[in-house]
Image (tube, rainbow, N blue to C red; front, side, top):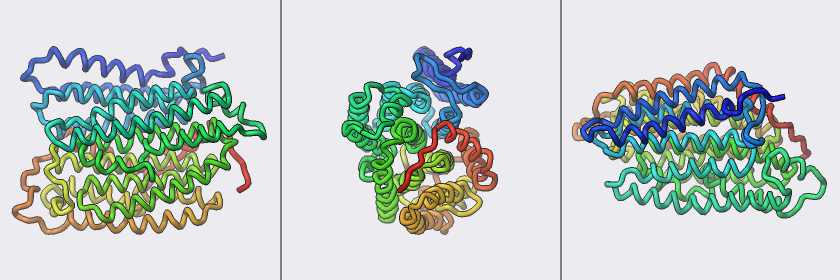
Length: 489
């Protein structure tokens, strides 16, 4: 019998919700002349508390709450810890880069923590309508955050594009849920698996699978659903891009893992080929698109498309190793990407003073710590040994190869070689001789908040590259919550 109080199952979500409500209550009564950055530190404290609560949840026995809609297990807690960590670093970057006089800063921090609540619900929900509610909470927050630079024409453009295309994707996801309900009579993930466990698979369930893949494909910016990514990344504030390129994607990948392996394992003959093509297409489109970019944020946008393809390769493994590899890669990519956007937010500022690769010439000389950190993150994105990116790609491609997908592994390795070119081009700019007229002369000294955020991400990337065993063991424990899917290919 489950004796754990139900609220313990959603304790991180409760803490973040209370933090967001406190920000909304305190900020309006603050003097107009007072800096709203104190609300950022309040959100940092709330996120730290939620992170501690997520780690504490590891000791809870596996169980459900609230009529079986929420489940606490090693898989959900793993992604809870990951998302809280991403939000923490994103908040530190925002505290550093946001202007002191910005009068909407309180709302910014409130939206970040409320969005995190939705992401956490996505990873712990085992009922598809609750997953959808979590997705909507997360999406609405990120739509607004994407358009937060109101004085820039690119800000509202980014928000509108993200909203319109995101709404279509959300509709596809909801239609997919409706079709699965029509095919099985339930939206509970475990019950869907039980009712589809027969030899006769209704066509409606297959159509629902396709709809869900389209909806999730948009959220993780997998090709051919990636068209929004470069424009939205370019127009959004850099700390927001660091957040939206990692945390919502991690939550979406967790949802996809739980649906495919928890609800639809009997449909693997349909979704494995689809994911094979999505993976190969995303890797290729992302890397080839990045080769043509001179804008750093657009380059990193195409890079994120390529890395979504790398991660999707692990989904095809049909094994616990594939789930663990996908989970581990989500961690390594988050550490690299949120860290590099923290540096971009420092170098370019809230208004993106530096946009082109040429603008970063000499950053390693003007700001050695920040320039060195950016070069380190780029080397990890390439997959240089002793970085998290190397082990992440190694585990992903190993899972695919062990499942017999040799050509997918070859495509991934070729694309990694292509990606090395544009990452090295940016590293070369960082260590090129700076021009006296370069805008880098205006870069201020990094703040304590920024240094802390960059230190955490550099340390995480190093640990994942040198001693990845602990995180990989946690990823494998999360994968063990799913039953194995054995099938002949």
